Image (cartoon, rainbow, N blue to C red; front, side, top):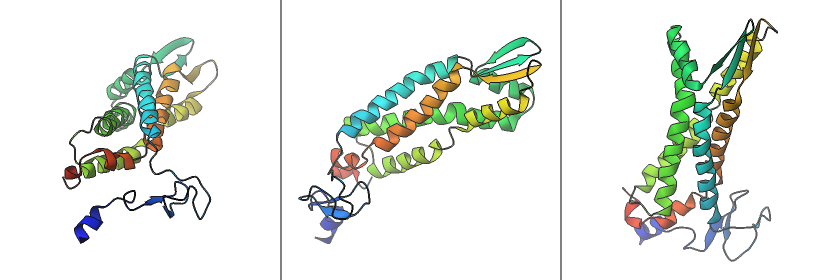
Length: 210
């Protein structure tokens, strides 16, 4: 009996948490007894919203890597750099630590976030037999590393501020910078809007302890 109670969900017990103040409320009440926020047992539309944001981010990842992310004017000569060519120039200049940081923040982290969220959303949508605990750990890791994804844009902004010398030397952000910023923003939003409680509802109970 105790084991059954440990695995029981709040929804089955007639309870739900307030999305605003996290107070536990009875489902029969429409609003939170503490802050009067409208109660939702599950936000089922959050899955569609998360998919839409993730697919958009995946599409924008293509121009973010193909088009130039910086434009450097050196004594009248203009040079465009993509994320890849920028990392290549750093490697050729023996700046390996900075190249590794930019590769991780600009290519590896966004790609892993999109792949990780795709697996997570697919597990909910298609009831994939994956351990819920493993999925939740991966989801929290995705949320944590997301905050470091803006490092590349931060480096660009610092570079622009440092090397801007009028007509002799001038650095500006190129179109890919906007696409890259949108990729980071949309993946963060895709993780934030999702009601993670859907994971526990849609997968089989046998996967809880895997």
